[in-house]
Image (cartoon, rainbow, N blue to C red):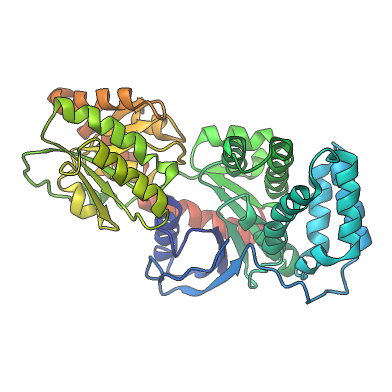
Length: 465
């Protein structure tokens, strides 16, 4: 069996939840051949962050903002394509079916040259005068091209022939995966760690670089891609039940849906030997990027230090992905006078730090089902996490609470719970024991691998689970 996994800006260059999940998945299925298609807005100059498992045949890399305007594909019916696009714009019903028809028509074909054709210009000016005539045309033009180029690039990023295409998002990655399915005839599995179209909607609404008039259009495009993915896939998985409600909103077929929770090597993390230390150590494990909201973690820690002077904050993860944000975080540390208390480790082996971390802090504004939360639990480390993704359901499991939950950006509540865990040894001990038990019973790696292996076999043999 050959599986082609399509990722978007993550594995094998960027560490994190999705990348770690994929590495574990491939390492623990040595009898399955894997290819990886990596889509990104730029060409990476760094080396891989992961050692590729021996069963990974090749990593294919495609750029989302790269265009070859000179290579034309005469087999494309431009007039027919723009008729369908106009129908997508003008009609509110059957958009998903129309979009899938378009994808089937263009799968495996070169598309970026379309942006320099007369047909595209006529279409563009028509849309402008009908819907956006009060806006400046130059800004309108570049906004539309900015919308369309990564979509065209993703569709024409044709993956190699495979039995199964496994997309890790319902964004650009799934456009490439659907092209593979329609052109080569393989099966399609979509796994959502977070709900892609909702995450993009939040980003677009908050964005200051996108004019308000264009935001509903951009949001609708991502919803349309997700809906097409849900319709065309042979199986749709996610990590927890709440995510399924958002999938069903876009008419996902419940018969194709599966919940497969993340899993970790519980034995490896439960074997961590705690090292004696005099300080109260708080750990944030993850990239230093805005979505992890390290700024709020630092603000909370500033309040903790005022009551627990020997507290330390370890920020464990690479900081070079967004150097501007890293500088903002280090500047805040200096402003609060915390340079002796806050340690940025850079990329590191978390097992070296779980030995001394007393509490794991997850300050993110968006998560799926964080592997670091499960790792901390297996290591006997209580958690303070924001109420995003599946964090609350894990921490407040009815079979045993393993942490506290606070609202995103509420650094006062964050600090309050961290201080409580520092002072209340009984609660700390209870959370520690509960976490180890819950991780072993519900989130072990063997169960996750068995679930995906069974899914691969069923989809390969029968077309759907």
